Image: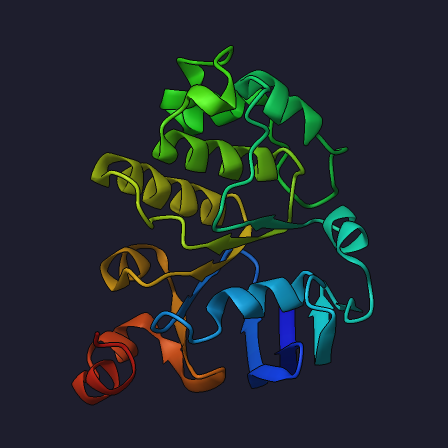
Length: 233
């Protein structure tokens, strides 16, 4: 579904990513883990074409998207849930979902507001509430739901469990499992290793913009030296 090869990225003159390579298959969740500043969010932004200075190859469903602008990447069915949410605070839940609707895609699940309310029951209780009057966790759920209205083949989830209540984290975990069962691929950026372990099939460990490990989640969690060296605070 997604192949990233030798990806470099810069902010101005500062290089952040160094030869990052990874792959995500249909119905699979791959966790991108690492400390703060390791390059996880930058990797996602580079995949989405949001980093002006980048080098390397990004292929989505067999098509090279390395040189495409973000809006064209989105139209191909690659969804991105940013860490800072960016909902429309003046619009209601229902309106936030409506503006994100895209046509049905062959081979991808079709999402409707009703299906999303079943996935996120909290949203179903507040369809007419403005986004600005929602809690941080509710806004996070709305951001994910709005992305799914685009009927994506693959979703980039940037730190979905950060700063939200445990009950919301549980809903996020159930949501990722439901996406996998529907055949949607997920690339998850996450610092919460417990959360990542619950939902992920494989892991890619980043440190200072370089891949330090790629393998199964079980292999990562059983390697105490790797955890201590690259992921302990």
